[in-house]
Image (cartoon, rainbow, N blue to C red; front, side, top):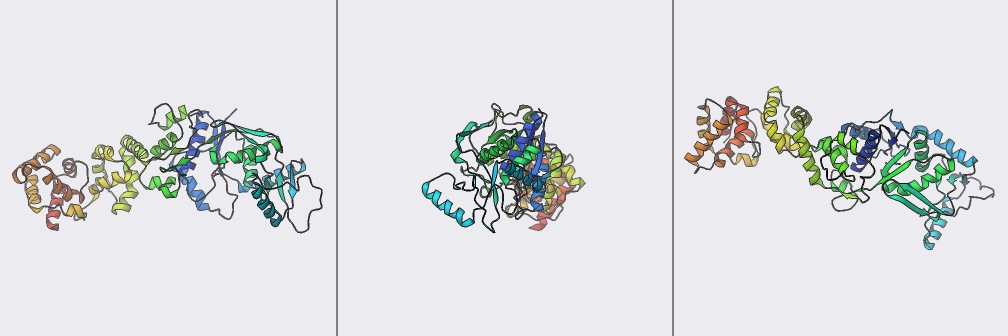
Length: 465
Ligand code: GLU
């Protein structure tokens, strides 16, 4: 049997981080088993539908490098097929038309609520031969089992059982002729040959209902794996309120896709004590056994640590390329070839410091600046004229402009003017060369900038005062 999983998001406007994890688990399960993952957009809610939301999902999948097999399928496009199945169920006697008016339904709701019943519809049209009322367009309801119990054999939660009284004769076709989600999802999964449904455990209740349709049609059910939801750090369901609930926010705040993937993989799945799990290992190791039964809390620090790890591992030119939009947005500069060469020379240090690409950008943007440039407030306060002049003279006399020689020159000035405190010289130098107070080793940075550029920047800082 070829494993066929599916990723069926509803286009809500952005890709929630939990949705990304569902996609990842489906993708990994398919890859691990040499199977396929299909991509279906659940776009039957036409009022809320927008192409932009679909594009955000596709962009997020592409950014995470999660691919799928075949074309993206639109659920809405198969409406005729959903209606056909509803009619078939009707003909088989597995479903029936219900002519209840909204008032009648309201009455039933009030009554059953008072009685504390789990479902409200009293099935009055289920076996009725009454004459349908005039002017009421019927809905089609499925006949749910009246007795006994229903079990979902779940790969994560094990057997989950409910009594049939928990199930109602739910609607499969609305009075306007449109199929409900419950029907559409079953028909699509069946027609697409889906063998494994891996989704959030908030869908477990739907599964019992969907199984009623599978049974009524005599179709084989897929295997189910319901995965616990992701909680925010405070233990409530992860939402926008916690910040960065959407995949693209991670991209836009300097996270690498491999770090996000590694993090969401570990959030709900484990393989011994392994924390760093690159994509190829994830494919090799992924299984249902490793999925935890309890909801996991999002931990931004852990994600940041993983991001730092993957930045440190990454090819520097790739990092620079990824940072290009950030240099522009945050510093209004586009590093030219020379600047990029300088950043490359400093890459090891930048990579080992950066927790995010924003930090990488901010700590290397100075390489791309040209004099005169602005100083941030703290840096402006450090432009000690006395020191800067001494630096200008001493450094221009330096023949071999290396990091070690620059440092010992600074040390000499510190001994002479600042009681040997190297920081009192290094800080003004950093302020002059970078316009900021945070950077990798300033002696190394000066070497990379070279003697002429270093001198020009010190002079601009002198002139600035
Ligand atoms: N469209 C549903 C959602 O986004 C997924 C349904 C399913 O996995 O069956 O929650």
